[in-house]
Length: 409
Image (cartoon, rainbow, N blue to C red):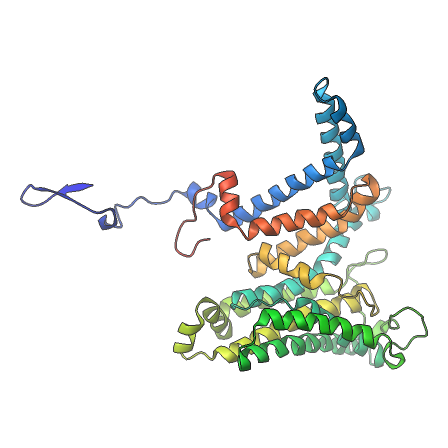
């Protein structure tokens, strides 16, 4: 590119020398197409498409039409459409609204079951997301969930306290249990520089063996059952229901909403949250600015553990009502996918938790009514997370423009 000088001579001008006012500005459409939220949505779409392929491939009717595909290809495509649409409609009916139910209660119960399944995912996901925003890879959500459940469950049936106070004590105990387990990893990271990924993974194993040991002790489980489980928590310690029977939605979902607001305020409006984000962006610069990286590491891991502990408390006090070997399920690992899909933002994590909760609740209905293996839902979730972790791949598939602006991903 050239321009004329005051003497009339033509001289070359480098592209980087163009004044900012003359540089091409991104259009609104380009900003929308390059936004990270669109990548998340398209990742979900691709995941569902992959699930559709697997659903069709596993159906015997679709397989049968392949034998005469070239003579009557329409039969194959009709079979694929019928199989996939029935499976996803069953998924929707099991997760949101069952229009074929005989009563209104049974029709709306699926959405409440999705909220029940999403509650621990949201709480644990917020803990994982907080660590990600602070530059820490907290893979110990599983152990922190288990410790929170152990503390909350034990305090839930060991003591006899007045209504309301007992529930509060049990919930706080779950928070403390998770915070202690997260704090161990944080202290080792801050004091010795131990890798938090390795430490938290090992703590997951320890937590699993710990609950297995405790549930074999009569003083702990307080029940004569041959099954490794504790007695039920007291009614005074249970999270109160939000809806009458047969709905299972309880106060745990309100706690998840409150936790989402708290994490947003902590990260975006508090001085401590600013330190978290500063350490996450550049720990060396944060240390130069006078921020104690070790203290931030410890506090982040304790708060993250407390949130995961809340997830365990919501399970044992609200949904399961007793401690069992599988009380944690795969919540800690699923929470990692929830945090990734939510891009480690509080609102995004909340919405991702709702989506994965709907997948979990609707997957059982899909399997029962159509015979579709529920494992396909796990594959869909895995594909979504894979694409979330590789935004350039999604942009290449849909030919989207590169991110716009500084720091865009």
